[in-house]
Length: 201
Image: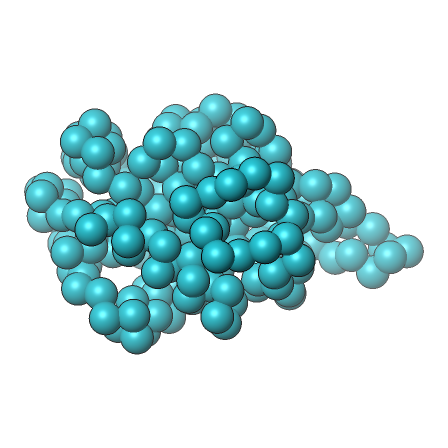
């Protein structure tokens, strides 16, 4: 059973449809206590980083306990940014701190018509093997919609470029994140979700 965490900013409808299409069993817990004993946790998200304040101490404790127990955690878009120390979008709001680094505002380029927010399809660069991205190769296109992004660090398993390079997917032990929206990225996105569900079984 997967816990799909609703903190008021997640694109739950599309994620639910994708999980249902893949035959996954999931719940949308109304309390942090309901996260205990699940096989996986998904933290989706769209919008402003400040919305993650809804993931208060009980939720952070439940997520931390699940990670210590070896339960895979997947963050999507703002959910991935929440995995880091924080974001310049809401400097006073702490992230989970499961990954080191801060998310920063993307740079645009008016001459190249690279706007912020960055909305559209970008190709992934895959520097190394990844359990989350198994079956994908460099050049696979996925869908993004965001203004802030995480830095390319040792935990980055996929990057892409919008005037500058940023982390498109991260992975460390049982912590996984994608800046793109797998639920809106066609077959490539479904493959990412399939891989995650296999990790949960």
